[in-house]
Length: 184
Image 1 (cartoon, rainbow, N blue to C red):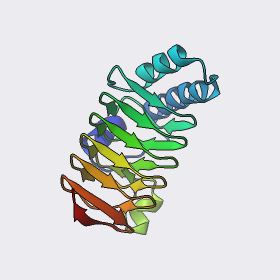
Image 2: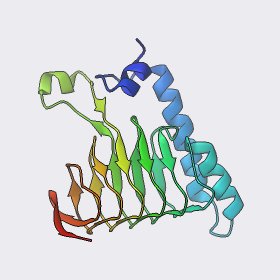
Image 3: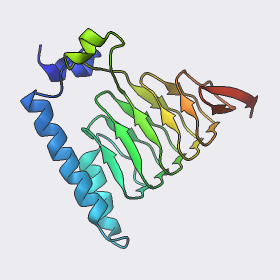
């Protein structure tokens, strides 16, 4: 099984020396760099580049620069998607955003993780777990969403939260770790 196959199936894998994964990351990071250098009024060019980077997009979306991701093909966004400045999506596993998702500045979505056992971690092994964000979600600034998390529909995640566990539908959640504070 290739390192990419291991990565996509959720097994431990090595990304650092694998030529296929390295090439895919360099290609994606080159496209992100081009995106981040476009002028604010180059709307068509920006839209076309995101459609080239991501695995799936809706028709109406906007991502403020700077934007960074690892592979791009594991990212899917629905209609009416907005990400403010400095969004980072580490996507060795699938990251899916529903419709009407709004993301504040300086947010990160991290599917990549590292083993707690230092011997395994020091051998360069990592893992990836998918992230799923539902419809009608607002994520405040400086939020981190960790590997394997699902955020339900009609959710507000408060600024500065670190989301380590699943968040159900129709709630406001905030904190580190992020916890449900009230129903919507």
